Length: 490
Image: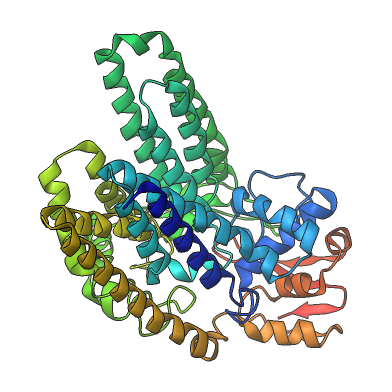
């Protein structure tokens, strides 16, 4: 096939992706969940007076419920809220855009790795139908921005080692990934270190780039400076309180005053007993659980907001092709072929450190990594088939199987998902605040009801800031709104 034909095929993949993501995006899932409502309202607040719901001017970290949301996705929502208003479409459309960018980068990376366009097209198609990626790519999840910027940095780092300015752009991209989703604050520094070492080695081998060594040095300095707000959040705000869910943080506590501000930042509970062996064993088990058949093929993520109940994270056809991909990577024994495997091995690390494992969202980087490896497996077999006609038939059969698998998955999503998961998407609050706008007492049984009142009523941010009253924060540092404008939350 000619290159132009591959471009046409890729355009069709993009068109297919957009149709499946934009279809009923505002009402399927049935309502925004609390993080989507918080992202939307804080974007609405920024669009109104450049302050978040707490009154902070253009913050780097959004305090929100007290967990301090990261800025990239919220600021991405701002222009859509400004133009289209505060609604589910405005909150979710950036996830579609970032996910489309991830699809494009998956195509570019696989094309670069294999030296052929068609495996890149296939990898984009496999990602577009991936059960792991589907729901996240059509709802307001911040992780989609993190995946996009991390893959963009990897692609830039691989682009042209002699043009070190590209390395600087890759550094900027990897910093943006760390300010998109918390998981990438563990993964991105490891990726950056790997490519920085590679550039340093190149510096000693290739004399022609020695005069440009200041670019990697400058990149390193900027990267280290970008860690300062993260360290400050961790030590002097509520970041450490959230980190208490990590298995390897023993006996540390964070104390808050009545307004939710950390009072005594970190104390060590010397009387607490720490079983390091058990902690390390738990982390190892958590890591391996992301590769278990139960998670990958049968039940998937237990959180219905992350997966359709009864579906795994992958299709059965992924497994043999994945094994072929691993074999192809082994046979090639090249750094560039190792990239997808390295990304896959890094993906579960953040989720492994928490109590909730396996966790599809925190390990979302695995979705494009699996797509890359399986497409490399198809490419390897197709290259081994001497007769071109048979290789084309083989690729076509694989593509058809993926499409039919996705069709069954998508039918369940359209016909069953709404009824199965409306409670998990906190549809109850939508009914309360959309249909009944008068004040009253609202239960906080389903978590942070105040944000739904603000979101659905499009409540003026400045008015809310003047009226709001808070309860003491809970043990995780979450801020609990007690009342505003006649609403009471109990």
